[in-house]
Image 1 (tube, rainbow, N blue to C red):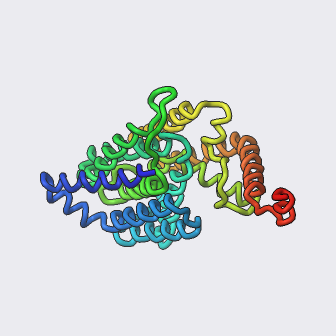
Image 2: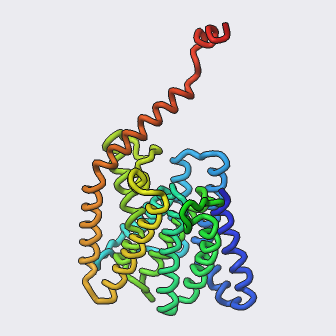
Image 3: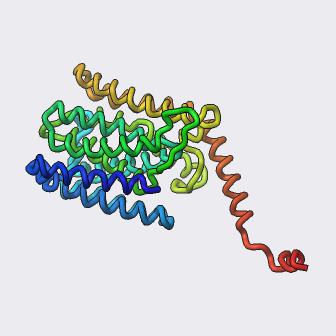
Amino acid sequence: MVGGLAIALAVVVALTFGAVFEKAAVVQILAEHRGFLIGSAVLVLVGVLDDISPIKARYKLAFQFACCTLAVMVDQVMINSVADVDLGVMAGPFTVLVMLTVLNGLNMIDGIDGLAGGTAFVGVLFMAAAAAAFGRNVDALLMGAFAGALIAFLARNFPLRRGGRASVFLGDAGSLLLGFVLAYFAIRLSDQPGRVFRHCTAFWFFFVPVADAILLYVRRFLRDGAPFAAGRDHIHHILLRRWSARSVCWFLIGATATLAGLSYLVELAGISPLFQVAGWLVLFGLYASISHRPWAAAWLRSRRAERRRAKASAPMPVFVEARRAA
C-alpha cells in the first residue's frame, strides 16, 4: 500500500530536479499552488495513517473538506459559473462540494487493479496536454510530474497482461491524492482568465467516478439511511458479476477517455454549454435507470455478507465456551 506515497515522493523529486533547469517555473509553482501543495501533503499523510490503522469516515471527510477549502481560499480556484449561469456567493461552497465529490468518487472506484490509477492518468494526461497547448506551462509542468509518477506506478499495478498481478497498490494515500489532483486542476484550468476549457467540459472528465459516487450516496441513504457505509455495490463490483477484473478496468477507463475527448471536441465545435450540461444529466439519468436493479442486488449481497462477518466475529457466550471446553 505504498503507491500513493511513492507517487507523492516522485513528484517532489521531479520538481527538485526541475528546479535545476527551470528554477523560475518551479518557484512559480510553489507560489501559485500553495493551497494545493499543502492540501496534497495533508491528504497523503491522512491516507498513510488510514492505511496503517483505519480512520473513521467522518474524520477523513473533515480533513478532505479542510484541504479543499484551503485550495479554494488560498489559490482562488473556484467555479464561478455553470453553463454561463453566475453562481455569485455560492461559488465557493459549490466548488468545495464538487472537489469533495470528485475526490471521493476516485477513492470509491479504487477497488480493482489499475482502475483508479488509470482513470487518474487519463485525466492528468489530457489536462496536461491541453494546458501545454494553451501556454499554461507552469500547470502543465506540475501535471507532467504527476503523469510521469503515474506511469511508473501503473507499470506495477495496471493489468496489461491477462493473468498479470499487481505488486503495488495506491492505498488511501494515493486515491485521496489523485482525486484531489484531478478536482483541483479541472477547476483551475476551466477558470478565467486563461481558461483552457469550460467548467461544463471538465465535468465530463470524471463522469464514471462522480456518477457512481452521487448515486451511491443517494441510494444508500434512501435504502438504509447510511450513505457512508462500506459495501461492494460500486459500478466495478456490479460489472464484475459478468466480466473479468481486467475487462472491467479497460472498459471503465476507455469510457472515461472517450467521454473526456468527446466533451472537448464539443467545446471546440462551439456548441452551447447548456447542451453539455443537459447531455451530462441525461446520461446520468440513463445510467441511474439501467444500474438500479443490479445495484439493489449488489447492495443486498453486501449487507448479507456484512451480517455474516459480524456474526462470526461476535463474542461467544460464556456458557457455550464452557461447554466446548468441557
